[in-house]
Image 1 (cartoon, rainbow, N blue to C red):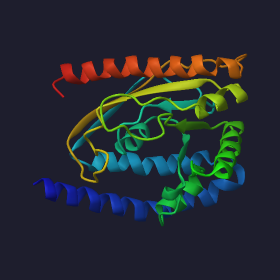
Image 2: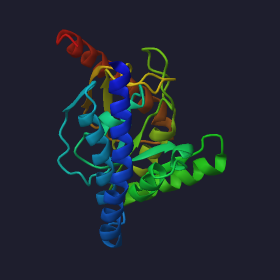
Image 3: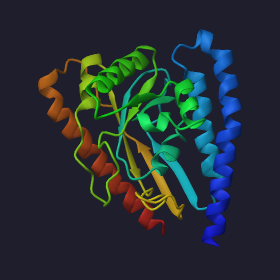
Length: 249
């Protein structure tokens, strides 16, 4: 049965990506001239991820937390990273964010093309030049009133512990005066574990937390901002785990 479900999910996911390419392309063609932030094309692309969660009988995802009143108020959004399923879960939030992602993903046919149309930002962490170009692209997205989504752990941890947060997201937030928006994720680790492309049963939730203002902060404040954000996410994540557990999930 598990093999049949996985076959179904992979088949529907591939079809969503292939057919969704035409949907995203049409949105991009008709909105690009007057939408420099690629907000509409990005939302169209995220809709595909949401559709994939609806078609996956193993996944039960939901969101909660602080409502975002103005979707065009840019934030540097940071979240813990448990699995590839995090991307599908966070895409269910109702406003657009550009994602900072490994450049290798952008090289995947169709998927990479849509990420570029959506305005997502590629980065090769091994290349100093790539990192600088990504930073400039991130500043560009924020200047166009679109939020930016970053996983400050840099990769998915193999256990239940949060990895140390890297400085990049917080440097960007301070240098641009953009608020940091923490998001806590719980329950996705088993949905698609690291090192596996097999879908598994999972009930997961992401919670949007209170924004952290960065106005007036300097580089000297970076460690405190980074550590405060990490602790905020860690505390909220533990609460989510308790809620999921108390519901019998």
